[in-house]
Image (cartoon, rainbow over the protein chains, first blue to last red):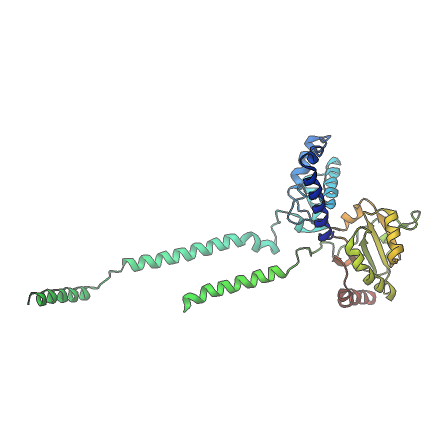
Length: 164
Length: 175
């Protein structure tokens, strides 16, 4: 669907709703589903799937016509006895892994799944390295024995000079 | 010196990564249907509801399926491109009239011209779901064995037609 059309359409709806005031929502309550248990399963599965029209919404959230169709499709298949796994396979077959909000574990998604862990390990390694270096530097005495003796001699000389 | 080089390098890498990310089009979801047999259907034709059309009838021919609707503004933009394509007669072009009203669809074709050998009616969008349609117009190139070889989501442009679709059809016709 064309994005411009959707925007214009929703703007229109918004304008009408605002001009009518809260009364406009009053009649909008969804009819109670015939089978609440089934409806719960449909919604649970629909929140796991992406709406391809409004890509950052789940199928459960979206009111795009395709999302409504797909929810009906899920409901129908569940009524026929299909399991969640069957329906997910059905969706992936048509729309690809992109419909899944939880991407599958496979070669092309390795970096996606492991990336955060690798970044964290890298960060921990860098932190450890820095801390270790700092500890080494702190452990080193500021002056060596010879330097210390020389400093003491200089200080003595200095006091002598003052007395004069 | 080294102290600045490292953050600068990390920054440049990040800019590169994000730049590439921005230039990608999130609407272009790679279709899992490429290389798979075109889902079968049997639907009544738009102009002659007594007659059905099924992809099986096209076995042995390269053909193009275009998903369209009279309510779809981008289909309007695409229409002249398809008309040009149909005029060349490279392959048969069939339409899948997606979630439309018959009267509206017929009026639309009458008004702008009908590039399709025939259009079939998918009033409730069920076949659209089988083809993974989510952004009308969509276009499929299907080979002689009935396998989907190419899918375009969104309007076909003259450049796309010239550089991709027509060469692909020529190649499939040779094979």
